[in-house]
Image 1 (cartoon, one colour):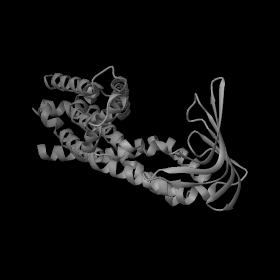
Image 2 (tube, rainbow, N blue to C red):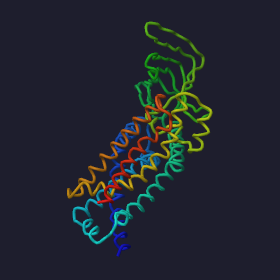
Image 3 (cartoon, rainbow, N blue to C red):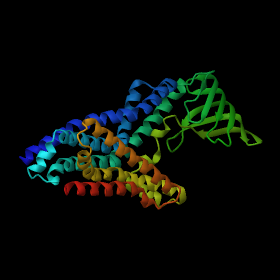
Image 4 (cartoon, rainbow, N blue to C red):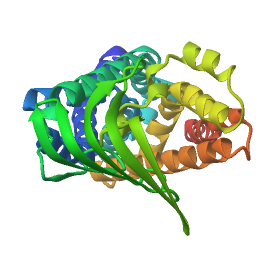
Length: 355
């Protein structure tokens, strides 16, 4: 009988889990889809390229959506059982809290392993492929999509206008307004230029025979050059951070070479690779008792409780990570949100098991 009960509960969780995951993934994707659409129209990217980018983004999103989806699925499943008085009947029949929660433990361990695989292996691999895809897109399509006589702002912090294009990849009479440094904006004009790639594989603007005007408060500096090369990044820069391409071991090795703020940034990324999977372990203890506390309010209450818990967790995550980045806390405090949620979950589970 217990095995049948466990199988039924697991099937309920499995049924709800992918639906919640798809919905949350879509919500997180909306802002990126809008930016991708703008990028596609401005740089000449095909729909197939956009689809490939969307697929490569998924591992980074799943790291966030898998724990959220698991908690909400457990809350909805056990909330429905509580609403139908099934949990009361089980406890009256002598079934322990551990036996009632066992399906959530099994499901949570599977989600933990999936999330860990994403953070350790799949996400770094997809991040690297994503950067290569974006760079290839810039090399192949961006020069073709840059029309003469039009202001372009597809590149982050840069406004560009081209006077003429003798060939698809050659540009003449170039005007650039570079505001990436807000305190020292630059105005660049040159006779010719083209988009190329440096040794690291990053897109750069190689311009020839021009002038560079730097505005620094009340001072103005004018320079002339025969050749000037500067790095450019697309509006998709949020998808191509190099740290996300490194495995946890590579992050540790990289951190050993750094000091100060940059080292703290790397250590925050390292700890995040494990805190996000490990939160699933504590959500195992949180889901069943929290759904029982919600009373007979229906499935919607489980969804609301799940979103609330995830919101609190991610708010704490951002807060403590920012404190670590600024050097106010030691980097191990990146685990503080997990420990707080874990302590609360275990205490709540223990309290419910004693009832």
